[in-house]
Length: 444
Image (spheres, rainbow, N blue to C red):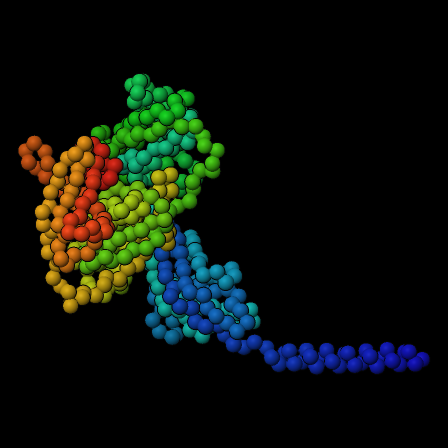
């Protein structure tokens, strides 16, 4: 009997203890909302928009974010967005899919903690307009630009990847007949047995060719026929970037590069020059692959005068008309890929930069160099000069060519930093045909 009484007492004691603990826990229920979501950025894509933002904070922990959006801006407290989505976890990136290209969408976000508390205010509203990955407009007939061949790579001794400047269409019958491959050592044709679109490339810019066995380390010339067209039925133009070269090679055994490059940074070097740094070597066609506009007005497109490779093929330098000092600009790119044919898309194709304020304390250009002399010594062009007194070690080199009639090309430019070596400075360049290995020029 005594044992029964003790057990009963203990049961009553622990029941009362846990009951009071539960009551205390309920009294301490989390009611504090997370901080508001800041720095939301919207990047347009093909039928989608990618959102990125700074993570919110909370006394317990953010559980997820709510994405509010619609096709009309919400400008007053009584307004509401027509759609709401929830992200998974506390990630700070989300893709809103199944949108309509050409329609502008407006986005705002809140943070939600594990107790269901939602941040008090919407984030600042952002908008973006999804666009087709082929960028041919709402009506493909508006596109009058012919596609070009960007490059070709041998995947192995019987397969070749061919990448075009835009989405293309193959003929329904015998598409392989539109591709001619010639051995540049023997001048004999390499048989092309098949041609199919690369199923892994949603942009339809990539074709996989099946060939007879190639010779290792031999250069081949690939030419594309006129029956290859873009989505607007513009055919390849004969003699205008319809041919590329590649080298026969065995399969390396390494996994094929399928990672898209990214823009690492965009920096205004001056009021007319912008330097873009990529995560790896890239391939681009012309200045038309780049667009710059003020962050608050996407219709005020800034004219780009030229686009040239910089210190390497990871760097591109844009020359623009005068930018506004202190203005934030948006830089977007299209049709730019790495050397494996992976195109930059989505939020990776957008960067921001701010044009520096003018330094009124120094508005005078440096003096010209003196004693500028060029000599050719054993196929080497030797440039020497005497530095000016108030110049830096950065030098802009421009190379132009002349034909027999004295007509001068637009030229290619690059920037080099040369350490001072006393009163004279110098640089060596390979002359004649070898110069192209230092400065890469685009076909006009």
